[in-house]
Image 1 (cartoon, rainbow, N blue to C red):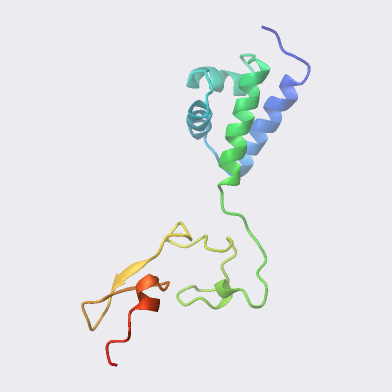
Image 2 (cartoon, one colour; image 1 turned 180 degrees about the vertical axis):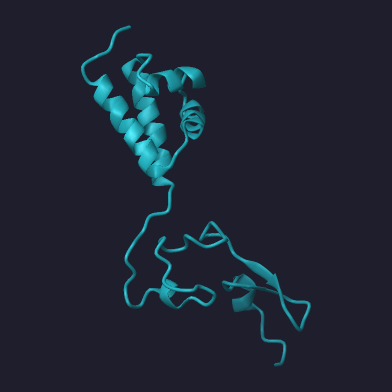
Length: 139
């Protein structure tokens, strides 16, 4: 199996993307393997170093795995004036990692639960179904 004319450039751009996104080669291989890649971790390492040629389908799976990992990374964004991240309590300044990102919670779809200070009731950051259907306790 010899190098095709596009392989060196594809390899270089893959390495550049991994470096820019701070993705390790182990992370790349694990994601590549999970989507059906059939080359071992050492062979992927040899490919990335230019010591081994891979068939186009395996190179494309490596590119797909890298792109999935890159897409999962938080991205910077410039907030608008009404962005809730600008005024969110507990943040030192504007959250430039994107909506719901850059916080310790990790996943903006996950609710954050905490124990109420003066009562034994649980409180959470978003209203749940009970908040809308249960009548207030003082009525």
